[in-house]
Amino acid sequence: MERMIIDMDEVIADPMGDMIQWYRKEYGKDVDYDKMKVGSWLAGFPSEHQAIVSERLHSVGFFRNLPLIEGCVPVIEGINDKYELFIVSAATEFPNSLKEKLDWLLEHFPFLNWRQLVLCGDKRMIVGDHMIDDHARNLIHFPGQKYLFNTPHNVDVTGYKRISNWEEAAEIFL
Image (cartoon, rainbow, N blue to C red):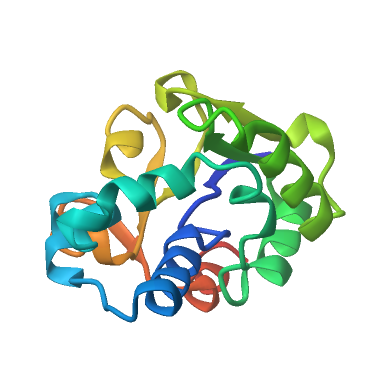
């Protein structure tokens, strides 16, 4: 059975969308998506508010209540039936996120078990046949097929097969 690796943030969970919605409500300002092209969606927030946004990312509860990326649950359930599936998330940068991500994943993906959930710091040790991630830095060392999930911060990244949404992922993998 082929092994599938799927990232969490910006692939199945939407921390950027949640943060932007919160920011617009709290500050009445918009973000600059063009500035995110440097590889970080934090760069899209006005410089005077980036520390506040970063603080919220590190706050208790932020990762526990994130919205799902549209359409991911049924496709991941299908992938789980067809592949040896692991959800892999770089979580140790945000220590509060470890328990929150685990609880979030078990709530939204009850067909997965705890052995399929990998919360780590660096994904270079991850091996498999296919990997879907939103950051090229996580794909560059991956030995299998690499798929970059489209987000505003990676629109200018080249050299990878792209997946625009979960409907497209279903066409590729199911």
